Image 1 (cartoon, rainbow, N blue to C red):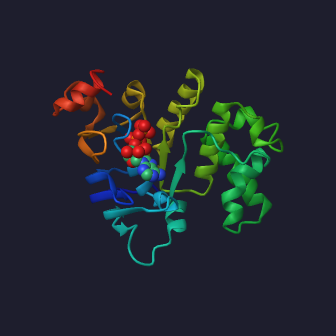
Image 2 (cartoon, rainbow, N blue to C red):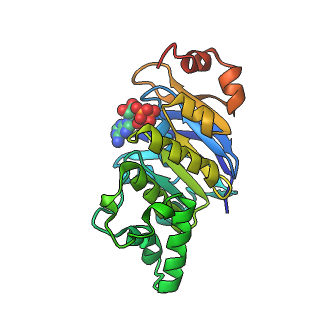
Length: 258
Ligand SMILES: Nc1ncnc2c1ncn2[C@@H]1O[C@H](COP(=O)(O)OP(=O)(O)OP(=O)(O)O)[C@@H](O)[C@H]1O
């Protein structure tokens, strides 16, 4: 489990509009990588290309390469659904299946994959809820709807659902932006734990969060509105926050713009 992602020369387009230009980077397994940068610089767009999720947007397309442990995710014959099983995603707003029970929310991916054995499902649901730091809060109400949980609990439920199918990589697009500070800290603790097993990539607007949870930070920027976003620099989080190479990075992290 946990794989290395190697991206080279990636451009992303929405129709004729080039949203992201010439990104190359390596994301190490069992680490947390944060993407930071001002609004509109293409962080979410780029993140979605790491599991081909952009393909659900009409007109969105990429050029370049994304390798997952040497396997080209865009090679002919690769099924995007299979890619998303290996590279899972957690979204900004918690999106549990609202009427489905807590148990079934976590089991949904396995059931889709054809697992019917109740004992196996119970095992995986319990383990995933433990790993998502949610077990103690829900163990007595697994048959109740997912929508009955707090926002922070719902987000941890979505993380449990994502890890139940044992992905290699977990992409998180601003996973705490809809949460209160206590729930945010719970998710941050969880992210720290997830990197024991998974490669984790998180988009965040919260500088402190990037500094707290990530090992590597990638700063994106765009020259002007309507221009494509670019990767400005990437490095160990401590270095990016204390001694960035580029002036634009320093200006952004010190709050001079963005
Ligand atoms: N579905 C879409 N169709 C067309 N253009 C899009 C679409 N989604 C994003 N864009 C454009 O692509 C560019 C990058 O957007 P994106 O959402 O990736 O930036 P971001 O850095 O994640 O921004 P934010 O921090 O505000 O979420 C923007 O110019 C945006 O308007």
